[in-house]
Length: 274
Image (cartoon, rainbow, N blue to C red; front, top):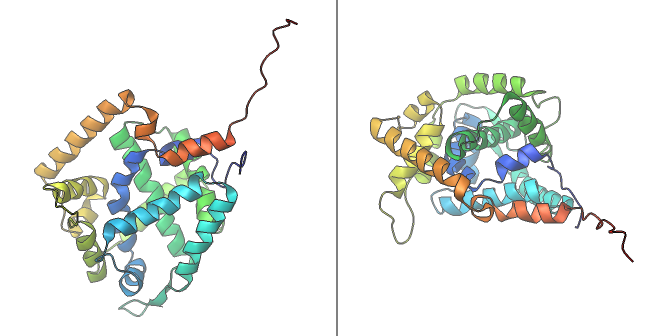
């Protein structure tokens, strides 16, 4: 719909999400999510990353990009689709705790992992350091995304500082259950055809670099010297190349579609000539 800004129009939020490099944070975001025992139980009971982890990751990415850059109708359509799937996800964890995917607190945690990993990737692998003001705008700009999945304002941290406090408390409560460990094994195992030597090891290095240190260790991917070297070399390569690459390469095409859709054409100035 020409002129429609969509549901997440904040420029700072979109500049972060637009970077193709954010896909590097996909595995880390999922491992953060399932380190919450209720999320891990929901994935174990209702999902299957073994069959096609890459396809599931790309499906999640496409939904996120549509909500972030699509027009209002497109955003609500994909949110309804995902929400319909989530309504069927409910059950009980091995320790007897009941869960449901559309619980506001669980939905907030999933949203927080996406916000946090995208920011980590942009700062580390794109080389764009976010100021305190940028972080505030990024967090506020992400809130419409969370509201699309029934996270109310009284659950959302009011400011970036409160979001940081929420993350710190949440990180301390994470644990790797057998269900979470299985998801990690599926996510970090190479399944390309034909096989690409070294891809799985490279992905584990990037994921270890992005995850909190203790959580990476709990998943069996500690920050060894070898992994730190690979992550540092990747950061150096990407941050050096990024300023010299065209926008169509470094950003998702969804961002350009949104720019064109919302572009306001200014009338040509009169020259005063007949």
